[in-house]
Length: 85
Image (cartoon, rainbow, N blue to C red):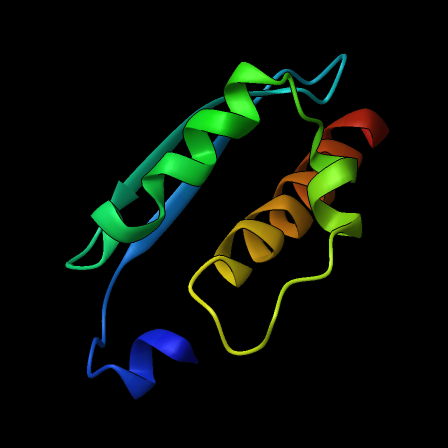
């Protein structure tokens, strides 16, 4: 929503996560506003943050950083699907 308010209609944020420990190992971003929020991803990696930590964070709304929470929920969903296999 914040990107749309700023006039951006595309972008991508991907979290690379260790399936076993659920620790964020990397962040990939594409989009015109990626430079505004990539530094937060660097901190997540440095502090060995888990996707559960991010899913539990409260972000102001609308902000660009809310994308991290959405990506964390997506990662949790994908991990739970792989555990069932």
